[in-house]
Length: 244
Image (cartoon, rainbow, N blue to C red; front, side, top):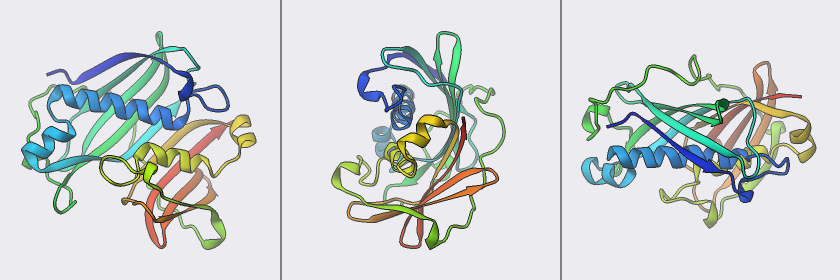
């Protein structure tokens, strides 16, 4: 079993944003797709894990370092690899490159939830190929950030109702869509003049159809912090750093 998977992708027009670059949600989608394909190859995909272990995968954290973004029709290489797991957490990294030039580096953390209780499952209780020789090289060094910033009602940026097309196969909001919601806290002029260089998102709780998701935004010494809440419950947190 190979701990590394990579593939070539031609960037289609519907992946573009208003800057004629790969959109953030499409970038998150590419990473989600290659991790899914790699999981299929390793026989630890969603459907197999449900059958063998009565559990399913959820992403808990993703961090991106963005040097540049591909444009329409660019041919990129998307790569992902597994990292040694802990007792509960699984990590996998990734990279998007054009030719030999890295464009985006990706770090992510996953857990397996029990299908019945939705509680995290210990790694040893899963049918997982623990004998794989994982890579030691990390795409991004260091730990994930501690996104414990305090927001108040005066920091409310906007609210949105969750509808049916926001929901994925797990019957909660698709992880990639949160990145669209978060960027909606900024206008086109700001996102044109300021380029996103670092993006870290933590998925805290599930959000479902019919719920109202309130987004709060504050500036911190570490970057711009955005939090999505349903009433007082935190759903998603993100830290964004921009360069002019």
